[in-house]
Amino acid sequence: MGRPFKVREKIGRTGQLILGTIPILLLLVLWICLTRGEYEERIIPPLILPSPLEVLGSFGSLWFEAELSRSIVASGFRVICGFLIGLAVAFPLGLFMGSVSKIKAMFNPLMTFAAYLPIPALLPLTMSLFGIDELQKVMFLALAFVIYLLPLFVKAVDDVDQVYLQTAYTLGATKWQTIRRVLFEISMPRIFHAMRLGFGVGWTYIILAEMVAADYGVKLVEFVGEHPASRV
Image (cartoon, rainbow, N blue to C red; front, side, top):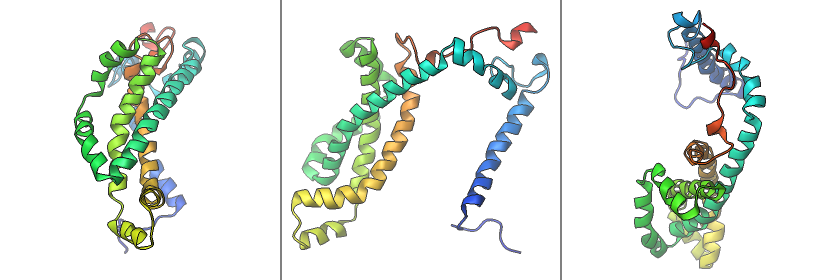
């Protein structure tokens, strides 16, 4: 009898799909068990965790009355704008910090300090600099993206093996060619992975950005109408 779990076993797409579905189904079953029965008999009150059917039933009110679609568009626009601004700062700076030791020595203390800075602490700073309108929300997200992405970009470039640089210099590559054709191209997969993770993290930062003076946004979407538990 073969071992059910092998180290670094190759799994096909079908197997990955089946195995990936199992935890989702288990969570769904747990969710149903915790929210089944009458409201007063449930393990978790419906005001804290509604049942799956109650969540589906509230979608109409969220979409039309709470204007969920408009809020998603507003939040998405803020995240995208903040991400692009943050990327415009973090990408070239991270590339040059990972490539040129003197530039890294110059900005590394500031990057290290920012890495330990609580993101919510940026809210009053951005409010004092940019007011409380849309610009403040976008710039808050941009600063958060820079703080998150910059160390990942620097690490991606730093991890390029020195052998590639020595080979490039042996073949007569210039400094700029080495940065562009060696360091940049080899580190690009990890940089792209960091960008993907950073964009996802931005949707957690948007909750903080929309806490102040936001007319629309995912933070403001609430269930509109009478909650089923209130009819008990």
